[in-house]
Amino acid sequence: MNNAALMQRDLQVLWHPCTQMKDHETLPLIPIRRGKGVWLEDFDGNRYIDAISSWWVNLFGHANPRINARITAQLERLEHVLLAGFSHEPAIELAERLVRITPPGLERCFFADNGSSAVEVALKMSFHYWRNLGQKRKTRFVTLGNSYHGETLGALAVGDVALYKQTYEPLLLQPLTVPSPDCFEREPGVSWEEHSRRMFDAMEEALARHADEVCAVIVEPLVQCAGNMRMYHPVYLRLLREACDRYGVHLIADEIAVGFGRTGTLFACEQAGISPDLLCLSKGLTGGYLPLSVVLTKERIYQAFYDDYERLTAFLHSHSYTGNPIGCAAALATLEIFDSEPVIERNRETAKRMGEAVEHLREHPHVGEIRQTGMILAIEMVREKDSKTPYPWQERRGLRVYRHALSQGALLRPLGNVIYFMPPYVIEPAEIQALARIAEEGIQLATRD
Image (tube, rainbow, N blue to C red):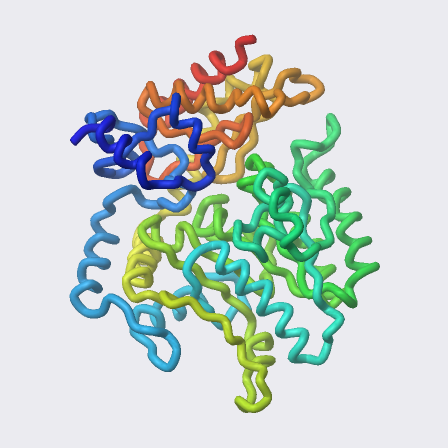
């Protein structure tokens, strides 16, 4: 079997996510036969560095032996059982571990299937909490401009990336959207911290005016990943936590993409020294192996649902595969790697190498910014450097980098005109240098007029 044969079979039956399928008339699909570490190998024997962790999920490399072993052992015992009226050890152990390692005060775990589902759970849980307390006017959410929280209808509604949301606008609830603290937009000479503080004024004003109708504010801490990897200072989270407490609204932290060491700490909220009321986790939770998500919340929120059945206060949200034992086993193996190895310390060294490898590109005439938060590094291509004038999206400059990278053995899937590195944590220095070289070549090709 080779790439061409599999591609033909694929195009007869599959509809791929986040894809204009007509593109594949000229852009070949790449069927992958196996993965090992940071490498993917196709059916023609070509190898690719997985620079984006297969959509930000893989932490410790493909075919990780420790995660493989834990999943294999679990398969011999229990593959699945419903989590309503029943339980199992992997779900219990995983919940215990998550309560221990997440920010203080998060004491209850509600499992779901994927990131979007976790956001749906958090939105419904917040709304339902206030309803159970008799505050029925609280029906709205506050979100940041340029945010992304998933593509199910509730999660899509509280996002603000038009590419995903605009088509479905008639189906969606209407949040209050305030400007993002995105530091790419700061004025010359203004620090990240100062800009993020200034941008909080709009959030303060929104909460002051609308707190009585707001259930929660939902944010992606530190990095708006699908929003072109835009980043901001932790001070914004500290100000937001204080404001949510003052105005009596929940804070939902969507750490689906940024959790588990991506930002330089185990959880991004740690850098602001805060605990949210609801914390959404997925992606890296299972090390990139299986779909699993969780919402952690505080005991007082749990207690608002705890009552006699006849009061009809229970949180009746369910997924068939909630707390799947095999997914929980993968997550436990992932957390054990964090426990037994100096992952965060190594990541800081790796992140430093990533930054150094592309530092010289800051002077490139069509690089508007290189920004980095931990193991997430982004290079933004622009038409005009001083004004940061973007290339028109229709020109698909990032796609040129993607094509070049594939030809050179790297998976660098862009976000518009933003090229980013978000690799598995096991990437080696030589592989970082290879990515930097390939990205530089791709940017040179993409910015030729």
